[in-house]
Length: 342
Ligand SMILES: Cc1ncc(COP(=O)(O)O)c(C=O)c1O
Image (cartoon, rainbow, N blue to C red):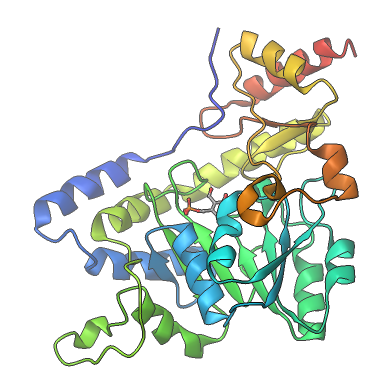
């Protein structure tokens, strides 16, 4: 029986070869590979001034800082997301206003709308599972209300609609559609912020003028290194093949009535544990990752959200990656149908 893990990193041969070359080159730290990767990634996805970083979390930290989010500012953010979206907001002393989710597990725009106040500084949109539903509406809403839109695009690479927020935060972490091992990127809509973002990612230095430059801002050590960039450059060569495969899996899942987006598929079920066991018995790793964030004490304790309360014990994530074939999707669907005796 074929065993299918929930996640499987994809690393191309070109990426492996690139890493070997970099490891032997004598230049491992940020250098020509990073510069080339920023250009090539931007060209591939139609993004300008890509600022690579060492994680998606670093991208969020920088975005929140550049957005000027500070103590007491209200930031509306999805209650259902990987907690990396919200943890940096706590560190900044922001007041997180959680927004409810919809049945597709993305943020509820109606709930965002009713939670906007004169103190709302920013809204965070997360492409949960790679789902872009709601992005266009939030772009329009935030523009109308003069609110900053932070786009957590950690799970979005390969989707047909991403990269529209005032700040776009990408993750290249190991299990993402496109990986550099670990890594991330920030794209600022206001290009005047790009030089500052580049300084902040490296202590506050202007890297081009290290010998002479003053440090006037307390920066971080968030830059990408040439090893990660070399993986990225290699993986970029096959990213369209990866995206095409993932899209074919999405289509197949959808054909069987199972919601799926570019990064993950999921099913809503009232018998989560039993269905999970059934899938596991058949070699398929299905999990209920990414808890509603208000269960963590860091965020101040549990709140009440009509949809999240109804959905929290129902969603089960299903594998969707390069190790999954169309036949595997058919097999998963058959197991689920048999489970429900459909
Ligand atoms: C929605 C979301 N935001 C942020 C992150 C953080 O990205 P990274 O692991 O690259 O720091 C992740 C990573 O899984 C994520 O899924």
